[in-house]
Length: 290
Image (cartoon, rainbow, N blue to C red; front, side, top):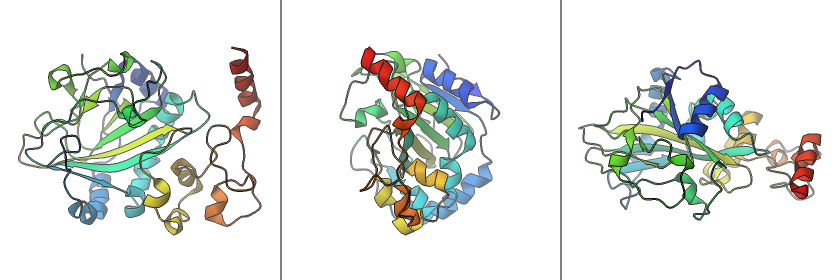
């Protein structure tokens, strides 16, 4: 099986449909490569200061640099890219809210070995989510051209529908080859892993992931991004980071205040509970009856 490639004009619904079926899909040339050059110029000092991984999973020749929103103004454009948000809206539309889960550069140096094939949702204490119930919508932006030789992410297409705890070898997977500026969308339920870098140059990726609002974020956005910095962001980005009430009543502040008031200083705003909507009430009623 091949990984489906869609054009940059694809809608969130089109992308999400393939994602549900195959577990992964590539959208070609979604941003201009010059935007990524700007991003890496901002981030390079932080990448240079990042140590290599200490085990086979993190990668002995791989640097994983996080905190992108605090360190790069350009990262905001990637996190909130309209096509990405539209896809998350569709793919995670079965929940009341979703949030930013992780921001990270994955820089695989020459000689890097292939990462073990895994599911990202295993981060949630290996909880066996029901088949077909997705809790993550993930992206890997190609910071360089992705080729099999330089360690393109490898995916077991269709494995998102399979049972949990399976073991796969690299031979069971295919490389997500794509041009710089393209993006691989993949679910938290699909089996995948970083490829081996057999080239003489680094392979850079930008991993930005999103998860449902009732699960903990892998990267602690509230500590990765200083409060004073987060306060300068657009409100849509602040809420994406988690400064909102998730699910029906998760994450409010003290006397039912909206978390956004911590950033704005507005002490009068009461949290808006998703459970107050007619649609949410109907959903709760249906679940109680089932």
